[in-house]
Amino acid sequence: MTTGFARAAMLVAAMFVAGCNGTLEDIAPKAERQLPAAILTSMKAKGMKTTSPIMIRIFKEEGVLEVWKQKDTGRYDLIANYDICKWSGKLGPKFTEGDRQAPEGFYTVRPYQMNPNSSYYLAFNIGFPNAYDRANGRTGQHLMVHGDCSSSGCYSMTDEQMAEIYAFARDAFRGGQTEFQIQAFPFRMTAENMARYRNDPNFEFWKMLKEGYDHFEITRIPPKVDVCERRYVFNRQAPPGTEFSPLGACPVTTQPDSLRMAYQSYQSKFDAAFSTALNSSTPKPKPSITGLKEAALVADWSRRRARGERVSREPPSLTAVAEAEPAATAPRQTQTAARTKPQPAQSTVAAAAPRPDAAPRTTGSVTASSTAEATAPAPQPAGNAIAPTIPQPSAAQRAAEAAVASVPAPEAAPAQQAASAKRPLGSRLWSLFGG
Image (tube, helix red, strand yellow):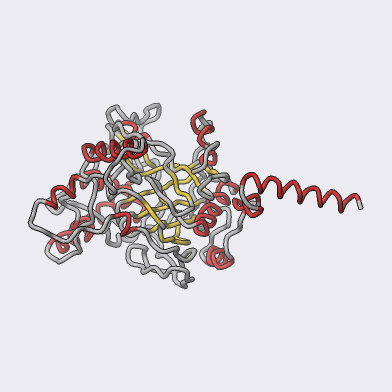
């Protein structure tokens, strides 16, 4: 009898809480939902543990978020991909608070950035601004991957998708991963795409991101990322006692011979593909942000809109002004409308075969192939001393896509990433608010 009364009291209390804050479903452990059986089966077939480390890649133009997971070999393989429900802004990086741009670059997520109580279902902060953003004066806050299919500078998923993505991260942290990497790109950095965007004002920035993209394509291991001279550098080791300074000069660094040689081979094949792409017909490039001036215009529009002032329905665009000068043309569909998709099915479980650059996506299905093994070993601290330079473009402007020469696979999985930094006050405060 006493037990029955206790249970009834607990139910009444739960209903009271639900009445104040949502529904009974809201107080269920949504952050504890387990991954679907199809994904667990695929992980087992690929030699992955449920708690093994993860990495996430995002491609704006393709509207795809990929989850990669470490295998027993130490390399990563694609385990699932999701159609992004909505992202805001255009192709190109985020410049300033209020410009509505979803970030591009290399970001780090640690446990304290996870938000199980987000007002956007579930969320995690991607870590913008990072060291590169701060060194280049870029501002913004609370940039996330979250549910609710609503975005103003974030990457927004459906709630069902977000439950799975959150579960991947949660399980990896419980397995001992201290941080995972998010790589956010404007598009897949193939030779064809780089040729399409060779005249874009963001091309130099994208070329820099491409080096990190290439290193992952070659090794299938998230690259070590540092910042010096206000730019990204990848898989480079500084001498003992020397640190990378985002605003300082890059130190003389070392890089494994195997990686350096594989990268050179990769680039040679890429150059040939790039030259071919220059002479072939390709789809028209999508609009991109033209730089800080346009970002400032959009930020001012956002502030005036937030104050309730009468503003245009769409944010201002320097590109739109330039395109309006020729004789009458049909109005362009807004990017937000073009990117907003109907609620997609939960995920595509990545199965076993083609490289993601070439693999078609079948939303909501389980495929049966597996990503090809990488062809170069994990970066090692030894190697020849080389200058810390970003690869300079040839006349063909380098970018990414071909297979690389075969190199021995690593003998063992790499060690876990370094321990997380202590949680700063600002990050503790962010978790008090929904995505």
